[in-house]
Image 1 (spheres, protein in one colour):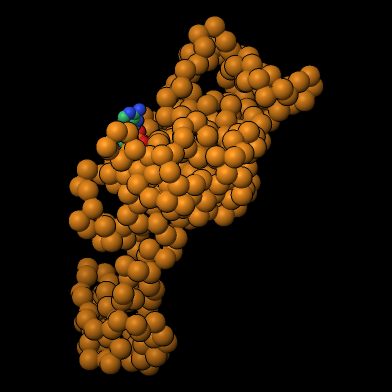
Image 2 (cartoon, rainbow, N blue to C red; image 1 turned 90 degrees about the horizontal axis):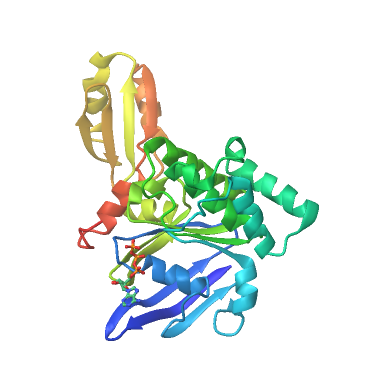
Length: 312
Ligand SMILES: Nc1ncnc2c1ncn2[C@@H]1O[C@H](COP(=O)(O)OP(=O)(O)OP(=O)(O)O)[C@@H](O)[C@H]1O
């Protein structure tokens, strides 16, 4: 769906981006994370055919930005980080104006605009002046505008920035919904946790270079060399008995006593451990919880990118 090869943009002697390789499939939701000035906007503007690379290639659905920019523009919806709304237009008029620019006319235009308002949950503001919307509502209006021509690919530059926590949750849910609709989405942010639970792939860009680019599940796997079990008995007085039973086991590296549970770190490469719960039950441990500890994406990335810019 989106592919870039050795994509590079220089301004004078300075590299805005350097040799960026991306490969995104239909339905991918790619979190493009990096500090201010890292090169996110530059990359997205090149894919959107708004900026020419110094060298390298970018393809959308196998169309090259060099040879088929018109085709790409039909396939891509780009939402810049800042965009203006017109003072004297209502929400509906604003969307109708842009729908007309996409040559969507008549009854189809009205239907399309209504559909977009429903997707971004702005029907209740349809007759409000666009410049009276909150920041979150304005971002959703921008997204509705970006979706008007039903693009397969969405490039969203910092859609969560400046939103309050509630608006952020709403926008994240909206991103999920668009992912479920099968769109391929690149969404940028300078804050990792904002995107951690929405995306299936994540890349970290820093000073123009892509430092990490992987499936979210892969990142977690790379970081997690050891399976960590969380074992909680119904009766806290059995915590020590759990440690006594497991500490010397040949699959167990270490046990840590917590307030209500024991964390059991297995030896590297051990991922089969069915004998452990059996052992506990045979020794009359009354188990409330026996599960693998979940690792969140932020911790995973922090572990992987030690030494990367601290500006994030
Ligand atoms: N027209 C330009 N002339 C010179 N340098 C530029 C130009 N546009 C961008 N740059 C530089 O290229 C680098 C990448 O900028 P870019 O806007 O892509 O970063 P970004 O990751 O999108 O940052 P932000 O989150 O602040 O938008 C920056 O160092 C920026 O100063």
